[in-house]
Image 1 (cartoon, one colour):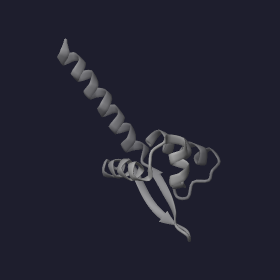
Image 2 (image 1 turned 90 degrees about the vertical axis):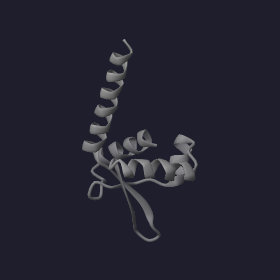
Image 3 (image 1 turned 30 degrees about the vertical axis):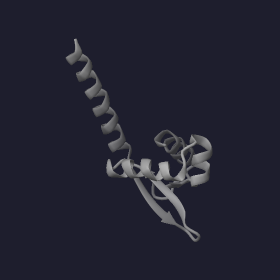
Image 4 (image 1 turned 180 degrees about the horizontal axis):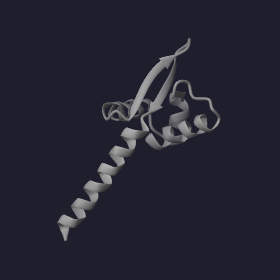
Length: 93
């Protein structure tokens, strides 16, 4: 889910189509590309929101789902994950 959203973020960013840092994606298009059902998408989105990596808004009429990726928090989470993995490997030696 995160990889799919980050790819879309880069697509919109390169074309200057972000709306205050937000971009849209439909549940159908995400499911088509990731095979994640709408239920699994909501679950993954909820986890990313709680980690402050993803912000979700509903904009327009009818509402479209817009996403915003907090790259700073994403990088912190990735660095932390890699750091934890390295610590685990050192502990196993």
